[in-house]
Length: 391
Image 1 (cartoon, helix red, strand yellow):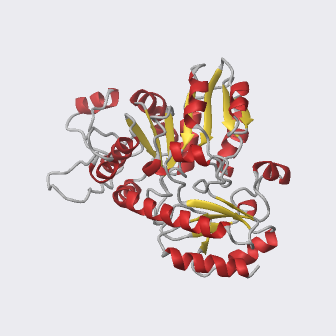
Image 2: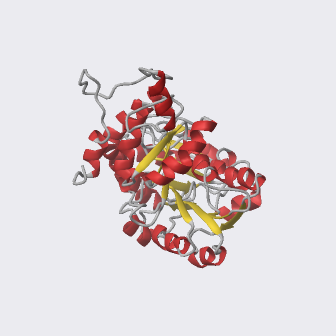
Image 3: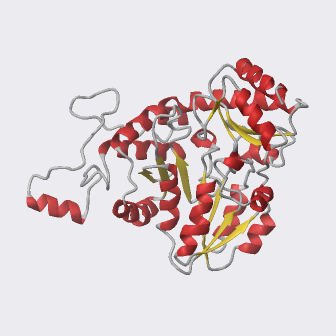
């Protein structure tokens, strides 16, 4: 498997077959497992073997297949699947941090990630310093000898800032800090986060991994020591486990993920380039455009701009009018789906932020986040152009 390319790993890695030698992975819908003897039960609770399971909250054969496959795809030693992407973010951070620890985080984050850092961790005595993620001098100034971890989204939601994983990781590792990267927008298809210095990578599997709007899921990826020694004890006792059925859905999603993501990215590039010239919009933000502030970094770090772009209609009223005029693109708050989805971050995903913080993060009243799906590019462009013309 070490010589397999990503697309092959996404189809075959981690497969476990029952005695029936099924082609499609089996769904083990069981919450518990039987032991031959009381002594076997005792031994398994002391130390479980590679394919020995105790309780579905601790692990499950279907879930283990997903964990092994996504770890092989990302290039990590191990993974722990969670009930949602936010369970993964919370589990990765909370499992490793204690009162008195210091974390440095990029300021531009998804609203729920901000809540964990601003409200949850600080409530229990963790000190959090926020910085402009694109400013390496700010990272250097904020990281201290006692800093325990740094956290950032490799591409921020929703303003699409791109963080230099290699440079930030070098600063963090100089003081022994753990680098935790939320890599959702980069996707496992374009990710080389571990090779670029990340210690821990988290995904919302709800997004591109499922990619078809069916189920919630998340995953934490890292060394076996971190996953089994730090993450697993926390999550198995606090209950953030992925269900076997959802794990099966994610396994099926991985099989087609690269084809979907590359097609979506190709369309996103075409839409961004076309809309960039539309005088009806104040701004178009897409890492794949040459005028994006981190375009060169995007090319070197990912190779491509990803499946999401942002457009600014100029005001909330104009943004709402544009959204309501769309016929193909749906209004929702997910992303990475086969269907193109648009959302207004200022009033949905980031609505809890103050106006001053939104302005600081670039979440303007007219900003619309557009997740590009698998529809025909010409149809999507016609739909968007007609909506822009309506304002």
